[in-house]
Amino acid sequence: MSLNVLDWALNIALAAVALAMLACGWRLLRGPTLPDRILALDTLTINAVALAVLYGLQAGSALAFEAALIVALLGFVSTVALARFVTRGDVME
Image 1 (cartoon, rainbow, N blue to C red):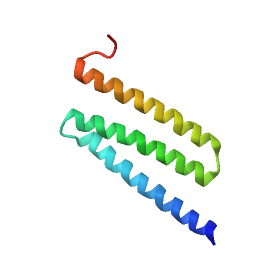
Image 2 (tube, rainbow, N blue to C red):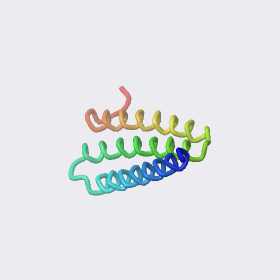
Image 3 (tube, one colour):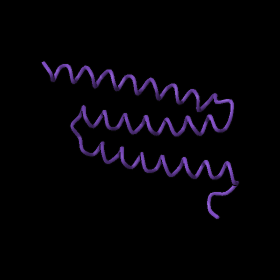
């Protein structure tokens, strides 16, 4: 019984994260200002990490957790680099 409840919970969570990714994609495309688009991109990477972790839980794959870690690192570094580029005009000093 508890395995069935876990499957339902994972499916609902996957659907919710996919819906959040669609909303972030919409904000990324239609954002009125550049900071809105940067924030949407950062939130999209966080949702991608959540999606990978949920998929790893559902499939029982350890590879999905490693992929989530890599996406999280690249998302953080790219957000910092993009924010520095917008504020200063260059990434490296």
